[in-house]
Image (cartoon, rainbow, N blue to C red; front, side, top):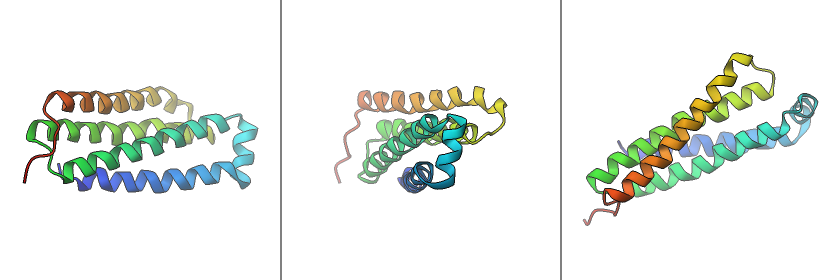
Length: 135
């Protein structure tokens, strides 16, 4: 996997996380979230999205630097887990916070599992020799 995949999603998640955080803190959306009692959930979704945007940025930097083959595969799985996990976890929380359909609720934990898969893959990279390759 190219470093561009995690770099792209790092940018997308960082940008949209910042926008969604600002929208949830001000104006009509803040009022709606407060009325629904879902402002704290919105903030949790923003927090997780921004944390994983930074994690993806780190993986992109590591891959661009030329991680060893075994570690590179683990980094790729970390990126995949974080992207899928963020979309499912934060995405469903955002939708539920503004009144999305209740059937989305059981999907949220699947996103959490994706995030955990990403972190477990990072641990695996440590055991596969995750140092940048010499050029």
